[in-house]
Image (cartoon, rainbow, N blue to C red; front, side, top):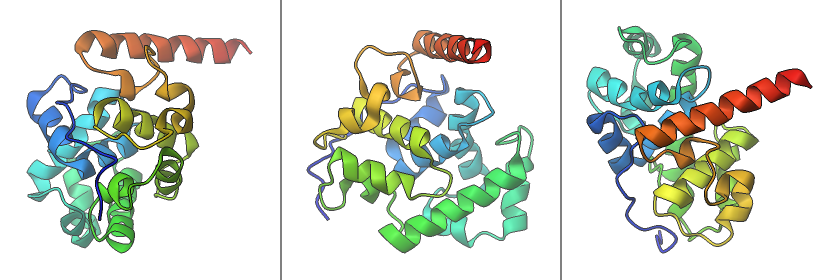
Length: 198
């Protein structure tokens, strides 16, 4: 495995919770799971989910999660405060994601963007092949990797589309402080309002 397309990530500040953000920074699988959970809940809730799972399951690695009894894993999702507002479907997706990471990347989530020194288009392709990652989610995650997680593969900005541009407030890739979280949320709300008017 080569890792020349990636360097050490800077400390992330997505959730405004130091422990949750530290886990996201240090554990690539946690970041990937946070992105998977980022739908129909506030962004900071989604990305705080991996820490809740680690505390309730005991470890946050692909093998531990994949091997969990589905009912026990669902119970971990449902504990108060819940990991997600739709615990059953999201627990199933997280386990499915971890099983695919084991099958395709030997359990190493970071291999998605490091194995074989992939360029941006290849990483986007790999992300879109994961359970729960459609085109938009894959592009946002690629932008997050490039802007904040040390990924430097050729063409990542182009592959990420609008989300890869500098100076935007479009997605979690642009959150570096509580203030930028508010700015991203305001942008999303404005886009939703504009879509409703069409």
